[in-house]
Length: 344
Image (cartoon, rainbow, N blue to C red):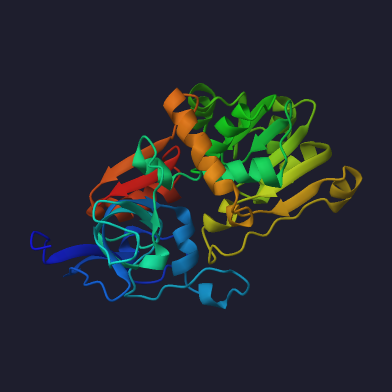
């Protein structure tokens, strides 16, 4: 380990934002290289994911919202998030060796001392290791388990260009969906959903035509499955256009996380319970953690689909930890399609 640098950099919270976070709420600091304690692994982070969900950890008043299983960070704390790193050193008997690639949740730093139990060795390693940071597993488990997608189903994916949505549309198609519709923020991104990600149609929020009207036109026979990453008006519109027996799986709440005010930990929406009742719609909050058996199945399918070219991993790579907070700002503004990853 003599060739390791004496110091490294990490991003810390400078101040809790009252609304959406900006670069001014963070600070990049240089710290001594971590020294792993007993039972810890020293990892050099190769990639970490930048996601709007970080807002739930840092906002003013976030600690006052009950029932949300996410920790709250205080000013001075280092940010956290999913990362892929290379093992530099590991304790004997840990099952890890220098050079192994592992996933863990101490991103936003160049090096990390991680508990052995908090590291997962990547096996198999996907053709492009960065794809391990994709959110396709959430979409795959939600569609195969939560919604029980059937061949021929019409599927609506809200935030079709998000980290989850950019994979969900492709997965739905590969699972046999008859028609796949996504939502997005602009006509330009709507065109990309159709051209690059295999969506049959895309609806645009804040357009002249209402979401209800756009969805009804895109799915004239109604939707059978809604994989919702947004909530808000998009969820309400999906209920309006749903067919009898439609299955909804809620895997995100971007309407709250990207709201100009608030903590990002609430996403209120008014739904027509009469339609839910008469159409016999099933609505289920869903996490991939609900189905641990889906993990190995998803990795095997993703590996095969990537190698065959049947699926792509839409993502943006940002080089340099000094650009991480600017990347977060771009995620909040919805500038990118797919997953945003920083290479420290």
